[in-house]
Picture (tube, rainbow, N blue to C red):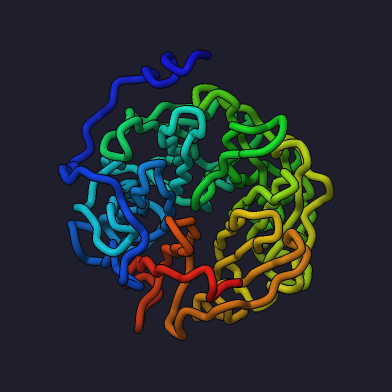
Length: 396
């Protein structure tokens, strides 16, 4: 496919309340934190599920779920976006990228296509009238159940194409639950798979015929990856974690490309019987298969059952970072860990605060800065989604 045909993929749909400020962003500013989302503002009861990337122009994009009717995971939920032209210090207005219109759209997984510079956004959908439990028990129709969609922006995140359904390419018929990310997806930079877009995802499967299980049991969760070699036009299934034994229940996942070109995957363990709440593995073929099954990452045992994020800093000897809460029994005390051995072991580098905290996403900024977009609050875990700018020197 030519560069021109990929650029002209689809007509863009104008975001609600689009930004009009022009210019190129700079991350070398004096601010340390900002709050792009505050629950109760902008017509939303709660903002959750952060995801962030930096565009080739240096614009920081902060995605989230805007939940109209409450903090719950179902109902009328939009995918929303704010843009920052100054490295995450100030933000443009909230824009709707994918409107729920009574249904649930969420789990944003954005990534920049390295060939065209376009922003590719993969999200998940289900009817606003059903719950995750009902979906896992198989009590919904295919139209109500979880589906996957892709969108694209060729103007630095100002506008996006309408959501395009890719479910038939990435969800087998016996799967029930399905979720992309959440958090940024991955564009591979090295070797034979350079240019590939990889989206860490998770699913649940139906019990075997004759089983007394309903499918709602946590052992039916599994992780997988989907990938595109043409900038998000077409999608393929990558690896699938199919253990379903209850020992390690891989769930929400995140990925980073290591300096040697392997892809490192780190996953939430959803109530598995193994000792620990984080699992990891690696792939030597761009996410098509795993070199080994998911196993417990014991150096992250301080992390509770929650989503997390990984980010590889540039340079052959630079560390791999992980973010997540750091109290094993509570969503509290957001922290960043570093690994200097490709994810074999992690050491805590920095605790951001002692406040409640949950989901997070890490992003590279210009200069010697890293950003983290995370859920936090003084008295409630989901009061705000904060953006914190961290000097690389504090993490390495």
